[in-house]
Image (cartoon, rainbow, N blue to C red; front, side):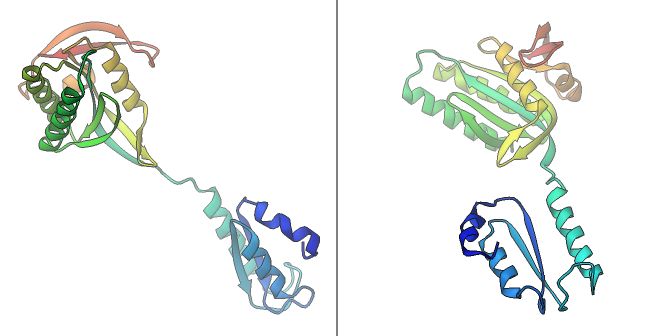
Length: 230
């Protein structure tokens, strides 16, 4: 790689690379190792004591330690940020909604999510996404959104689920998120739907529900029993 006609390919190497070089190497000057590390995109450079060229001669333990640390760093997966949360999808479904009404809807959702100490995530168009630390706050929030939307002549529908989700590059992901989105897709105008899992968690909290029976969810193989919040 020290030949001039080969050096131009170094920046094209984008895999993690460990460059080890003994400072007093008698067979290859240390500047060669430094040059490699400077021109490789993802290189880790370690300069060791000693003047032996072959890795199995001299202080071999130091070399093996550096190799082990390097392999550990590139093979250990980065654990995603996981949390147990109640996921709420709420959607404005008015087909002839004017821009002013949509702005009022977005402001309403943002205000109620904040009031009930939820966290609004990035939604899409008229569909808003928020997470809460418990189902009671989420249910109270979406109930308030629906009640406040009616005088504004805005119709909403919503779907909820409680489960473990994860943050990946600032995006909320996981099976629980998909289930909440699927529950939303089955909701009728003005309806707030949730699976039994969520209903069981708020027993005694003062919410009333209507059994909507078994319904197929688009992304789930089995039917789920869903309930509507009155």
